[in-house]
Length: 394
Image (cartoon, rainbow, N blue to C red; front, side, top):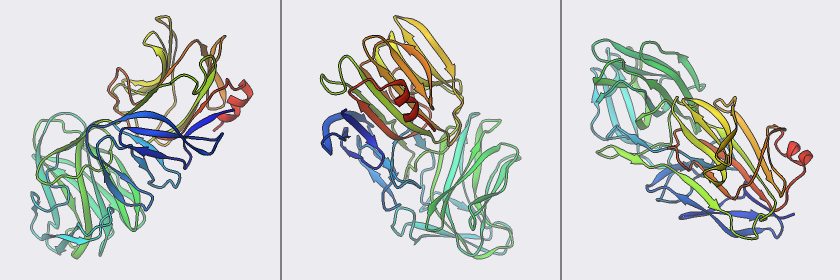
């Protein structure tokens, strides 16, 4: 049995392509998946450091995962003009900020330090003209003399107040008003990425920032990589130096050539992780298709994840899925001369016919959720139902 697999620690990518590992002869197969992203982007490398990769470079992300995962994200823009606090930020009375003081999560000395003198304030803040929609505000922070960092938003009334504990990586105080969905994620070496969803109820100039306690003094905490983006969850850091910057969407696809996974039978297996909650919009996550009238795909519609199958222009199934933040989905699809079967998380899901194309974060929708693909396998035989049940067991 010939197995081509992506992931599980066996990754190789270069500009515009990702190669699969061949279990049959223990090398990488010259069978590229086409990869596209028309901008630079960031990832966490094997050393645990944030690094920038070039346009069309696949991102294998190793954040808290020694095997790595293929990171595919939608297009996002960091609206904050100076993500590293080198300029453009203001201070409340009692606060001061020093630039390039400590080593940041990218391994260079470009993180800033916020200090206080025990006077009401001790905050650094920015202001932008926002509309009535969901934004996510995030920053990397590391404890110095104090452990609690506050996210605060205000203008003609409080937008919200959220507090994070940098000593143990927990949410100290959940917010109210127009702040919600706090998250904190460990980036190692004492650094945490803290984030909150901000949903203004009116348009106009909104002030937001990061602060210590009013009576705190001395060096409070280190800051790096501030980001404000339209959307209900944080995506990978987009560095800015004087203007807003956009990271364009990732996509990965392949039309399978003759003789690779079988022209009359074969099996495709995908193991992926939903990194963030679905944000109420629509998008495509994974698809296998012969053409637009014969396809299977996982997508989300108005925030609801669904498994969809169409055959000869007629919908065969459209099933809602229970996918939430951090949930694993193992999907296997086998095809032969008689049928195509879909197995998901250990059991048979649906049956239909005919496929020959594989796509991730691609096709007719704009993808709006980021997914980590842990492992992808292509077999040139149609596995048995028992094998597929075992392969997709979670």
